[in-house]
Figure 1: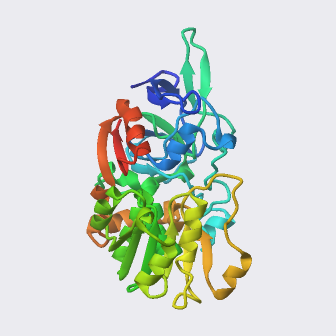
Figure 2 (figure 1 turned 45 degrees about the horizontal axis):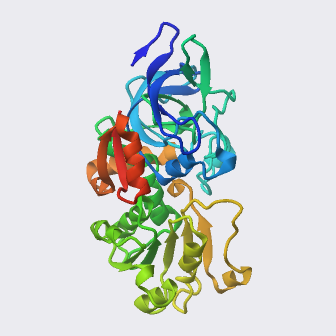
Figure 3 (figure 1 turned 60 degrees about the vertical axis):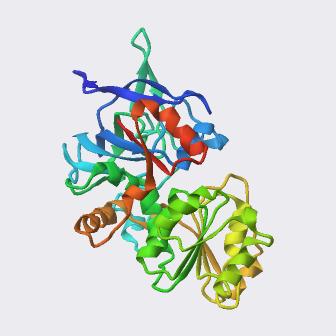
Length: 390
């Protein structure tokens, strides 16, 4: 890695040149940050199912190549653009795909964590302020070819450029090899339990899909004192890890002779207070919603959607089913306001006030050059989070 006289930073990046094509580790030239942007030296990044879906090109409307994927990471600020006042060179940071400008009406509102300018936009592949990229590949003639961005972040690279609204400064003492999980998985799952559902002591919870997001929900529910945390997954290997993360009971749909929601109703004598759909599957969503369908849950049964669902699928329920008091909501980034709330969250983790089992989520650690192997592990269901050292 090196910086040129023109302010460019040259470093290795994992570039995808087409849907499902192998990652190419190559030199990427990264422009200096423009106004209200920062350039970050990525030290650690990990892989989420959203990266897997994007790599495979499962949503045609989101296809843009060549591209640098990745959205869960941590690093150090290398340089800042004009107008940036809350970040400086050397700061420890985590990128966030759901930005927070802190100035618009949405950011000032306590009703949403979606910024009017920098909320997550899966269809965007350029920087927000000028509609251009900051990544380039150079050919043998020195010609620069633009490389597209991903989810406001693009972390599969030594250097990335972020809008300052998508970059959170954290305590410099915090271990960056664990804090990278706050860019997506841990924040999303724990926040869904705390902020979206507001799980309370004694609550009953069902989690459909025990990947990283689902287990982060379990972690959040455990910390809130939920009395029963039911994990639902077709992979029995997930149950061992689930037990470590606070899951109290397990249901494998393949072993059931009746619908899962009926099994859960019998287990809870009526149904759960909260269900979380973390699989991105409409049939699973239907079961999650139905698992709150019972006498004891009428009036407060809540289903939280966390899975990413393909278009143009629609909700598998009749509007009249909501007239018994059940509710269904979506959740982005755990309803955390990234820049306002994540630093305090990290501080509480550092002080021991919040005891998140970060180590439990990381099942593999590999050098950055082995990113293809990391994707294979995720695709085969063998990993939760594979940490890549850049």
